[in-house]
Length: 181
Image (cartoon, rainbow, N blue to C red; front, side, top):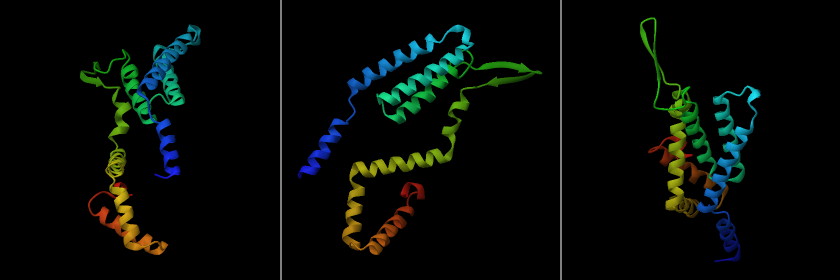
């Protein structure tokens, strides 16, 4: 292995995620967020839902700054906390307000507004593409396909472009265009 590759692997090893330090950083972020959200004085007019929102904001900011957990996990955590803490006036997900308006039964599931964006077909399309890309990277398929294109079409730009276009064409026969890209 050459020196450049050893140096790159050493740098990647230093940046690798450590569960122990991530847990410590996460707990510190939770305690700081609780402390700061409770430190806001009462006369400010901040409702309990406002305090919960402030807690979520401070926790997310702390987790992002410290990189205690990956950024995508912070985003999912924020949505989950919004559902649990803000989903209903009482703060629980399972409970839903039931009442009657003019004799008709009315049911409120306020938590659904937080997960409505996940129901978008575009989100699932991109997620599927990212999962396929990660799988191709992990299995080494992408590296093999790149070497196949390089060996089969040479190193001249116009032939490389043709090889990439043909490979994309073949992939798009089987998977969506977004996943192919």
